[in-house]
Amino acid sequence: MTERKASFARAPVELPDEAVQAERFEKARSAQASAVLEDYVELIDDLLASGGEARPTDIARRLGVSHATATKSIGRLKREGLATSKAYRGVFLTPDGHALAARVRARHRLVVDLLIAVGVPPECAERDAEGLEHHVSDVALAAFARYLKR
Amino acid sequence: MTERKASFARAPVELPDEAVQAERFEKARSAQASAVLEDYVELIDDLLASGGEARPTDIARRLGVSHATATKSIGRLKREGLATSKAYRGVFLTPDGHALAARVRARHRLVVDLLIAVGVPPECAERDAEGLEHHVSDVALAAFARYLKR
DNA sequence: TTCAAAATGTAGCATCGGCTACATTTTGCG
DNA sequence: CGCAAAATGTAGCCGATGCTACATTTTGAA
Image (cartoon, rainbow over all chains, first blue to last red; front, side, top):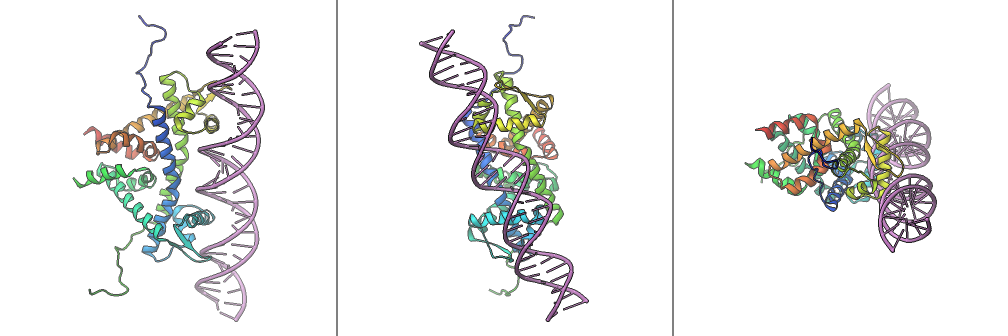
């Protein structure tokens, strides 16, 4: 078989430009950094809207973490100006926190609806959306909305 | 406007069962935990396939991190039995690592194609997929494949 | 009212994934 | 060949996010 030693045996793998690729990964990392905060504000907003109270223990149970972990994260929410709370009292959202919660919830809805629209089973859509949502850009979100409107 | 004081102003917020919700968040966290490993094996596999070498410096540049960070993560890949390397030499994948890379790449492709199919601009699809892919379950992936086949 | 259980707070530990700074080894060029 | 530059390795720091263990405060029921 006429083959030269250095020839490529497989399809020529096309790598993206170095800088472009690095930028993509950086975007993904920064999205992940805000994911936890987003989960907390969304959940707190839900609890406030439904039951009227957002207690650290409830938050912890719903997120599946220890109450100590939840308390620590709530502290971060407060440092970032998204929530307020006093010792031994429930947690509340600042206007910023509330606005973030609204955006997050709307995005969550869209992602779930899109998944279902392309044939993902509802329960699976809900489960996957919990991780997916933090990485969907505004541009993609707009595309989802257009797609669903058809 | 005839409104009663204590009536609910917003739609009655329906909260998922506590355990169900906790399970969703736990899934998302565990998916995130393997995200970094998946990114590394996929990139290493690409580098090996295209240029023939996967050097820590190249990996670091493409991921947008320092070489020290890359080295540390490569150490983790080795601990987890996904890669091998000797001091001052390139990185290689074990059979397990190669298999993981193949699965990750296939999933990445599907996610990008699905995004494009629903109207997301290609470059945006590539960017978002970098974060999204780690959270798409096998069930959702199968649905994506079915959808694209139509 | 009292007191035990539940909720909350706090301290300390581990891992992970970033980073910078510095030490060491390879590599390649003059 | 020799030596400087590049690549690699290593150490130590930080913040985020988990955890357990223990201290404190609230709460509710007897």
